[in-house]
Image (cartoon, one colour):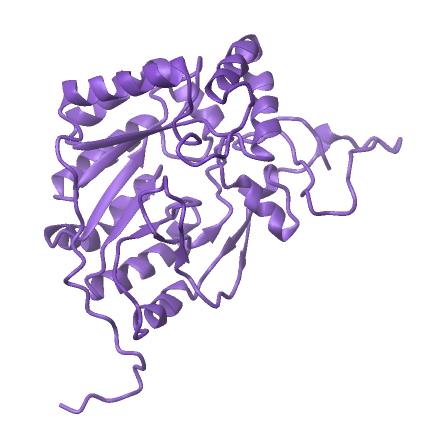
Length: 356
């Protein structure tokens, strides 16, 4: 079904077909009274998948990490702007509603990670946890895959970074706080807006904005280096909140900050535009006009160095505002460096007894 009706608790307004399919689908009333309005509630399903490897290697020059782990494919938070949505087309599912309701988990991730860390040629460098989809999305509360991964990294004194929109990261403070004492971890919480109504529509199943600020406070209180991500910056929708978000984050103990402007790759483009026309029709033209200004006349730009910050006058103003706010609120005064020389690889085969 390709209905264009907003679903309660979901970000995408419809289910576009995966781009690799040979067929397309559309809703159809056959005269028996069935219609899109009668569609059953959209429930979340989680399919376990076996993986041969778990550490992803990145060579993008504008991303500050080389290694990452994604415990889940798809994300129940349902952020309408999520750049990871197009990846669902690789499994012939829709980057729209399927992305946030038909998830895949990697239950053996921790065991596979342990094997990869034990390889003779492995070189330790920080691993970004949940770089594509949120490692602390709601299903993590039940499955605990992210926690198992952190347990492996903590046992090996391996550095990691986390970016999340969830307060569930507080559950793992018993692991993260001792790692922080050794200089092994940094956690960023994404706070896109302080407007609860906008957050509910744009990020329907993520933690409320004020709850994310409380998570930043608890991380800082536990001694975990905490940062705030104002991402994405959506022109004419949330960009006016940049300074307020950084100010509130600094007040709860945050010491680092970053930002990313809105990206609209592949299916994210029509999904975001349909969402915008549905929820904020009076702002539609202004938002899209500013996006085209950011992207040199286009609506998307995948070039390294420009895709995260945009180009032009407005992009320059956002950068200046961000830098000025960081100076005003004491953010990014120093760069946090993670320690790598404490790493101790696990034994390659746990069945092999030690000599002594």
